[in-house]
Length: 346
Ligand code: MRU
Image (cartoon, rainbow, N blue to C red):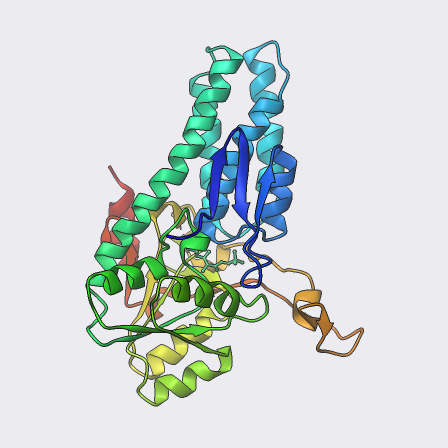
């Protein structure tokens, strides 16, 4: 891929600034954990797996800022760093998964010197990034088989290289099908209000030479009813034990439209996006973001001043609308409760 979403370089965390794409390809450098937390909150980096990687790297930076003379004091201060990271965005479970993994590694090595623990945490954060890239490629390999030759694939939001350590989940499936030589094209929903589809999915697919057509969100039904969409593939922020899936606001509408038009609707996500502690999607916390994302476009008002606004950033698609969940371990269909459990049981 011709861009790097996030990397650890010279004890700094480097991220492509996703608030400035597609106009400018700017890389930001972070040397402390609080600014990484701000970058996650401010959507410099976004997408469930990518914010998991960012949180892990933030924890590794935080470990370097801690001054402690006992392992207990170090772990206590690391907990505070983790709390700051955990308060950035509530819906994507990958964030909490990555933080817990970092905490566990720190606790397992707490008998080592402070310098050693810092190095171990840095290595773990880099490992999470490297693993994510491999997981996305495996998701791509499994999912590509579901995409027929000549397909037009509708996707929502950005579940691409920009939302992961690279390659993507939903876009990983599309990339893998394209790389396998299938003649496919993508319809990208613009994804109001933050425009991840228009600004990010369109940008990264065009960069890779994958045919992509941009549509506004309210056009999806038109193209489905016209017989122009073969299947839908989206990413996920959190998947409950019964398969109910939280993803970018508007995903639920796409899934219902797909069912009405007999079009298969697939979710692509790594198993780190599963939250089997939640029985169903009603229990998934949904982030509500600032009204300005709805009232303004590129800084310009598109609504009267003072208008009441709601801005949930995610919705939950009930499992019954999902034709298959594509993970790095394979595609599961049907009885999600039993099959998701089996997927993570060693
Ligand atoms: O608010 P965002 O841009 O972080 O939301 C991102 C999404 O909803 C993605 O579809 C999801 O995180 C999957 S990314 C592989």
